[in-house]
Length: 489
Image (cartoon, rainbow, N blue to C red; front, side):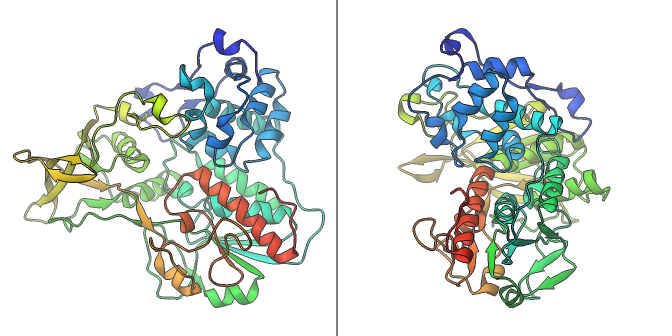
């Protein structure tokens, strides 16, 4: 694949970023797609490694060596066809996927892996630029109707696959825009929402109907952070009106931090900050949370925490500190121990580099301190140590730091339970929808004709896993409706 000696001749070429001082003035994307020549050189590095572990490292099983080779040879349109054969939305994954495929790259054993994600990004951007991405409506309609609850990547992938199989698909979304947390949860500087909108337009041309501001379930379903609903449709109504229902509503209940002072103003769940900021950028609705000149503490070291860091710098925060409960990972992974699996190592995002981010590891928050007006003003914490999987506080390590705003970015624990209750769906031990991914009846819940895919079933995960489950669930529903399916699994 690629040039037989390319991995010996060429170094990895990274996508360039706009300068920090420039990108902090706006919320636009700042990652610069590889040039055709750089993408060709990157594709040339793909080895004829015999067993392409990258295929299995990728949850949608992208045929990576093939499109690397096609880019190397300048066959961009064919590369796009191969890419789309396994992934409905490479424009999403090419921007925000952490690229487990690169961790599994054989070249990565003793050198920098092939820049698979950057090549994927280049292929799909060229596909849109050249007009190669077009609607693919079904030639024959089946007369079957499918309802999909949730328009995140799992719901969108399932919808597109089922529409192309000839079914009439309606997607219900409680937010005011399509995309789930891709739409309002992820900042525009990581994923410009025009990228989602052009996919929505493609899918509408393929026959998918999108209904926004509609919440599914009983009328007493709580509002939630990402809920703009102005109308309700019951679970019973969907089961009556449609031949099958797919629950793809994500896992939106944030993990809370029940410590003294949690009630003070200025302590927020991360999405309480990120979603209004997206609405300000996209719709001009002022974000009620502004951290300009404030001391910000972000609790949680993952992607959502990183998004809070980058957004805080764009506000003009006086300082940003990020806490992580676990110990600091090593600067470099132990490849002999972890390859081809996702390695434990220090990861520094572009947001961390946009200011003097103070990252604290092995720290537990003990208390929020407030003023007489009920505003948070400080945070008390303690250093911890881990032994045999158990955490204990380090004696005498307590400390306090200024905190005018705290964002809890510790992940999400389960989907909104009342949605599953409305359908009478059995839950697993984590309160997610219970459904298997193997054998007959895969992705079907305990209720006949009701399926579950993505984070609502597997728990908080990656966008690429959501796309995989949406595609596989679509095939299962197609088999349920038609007795057989030609959709890829």
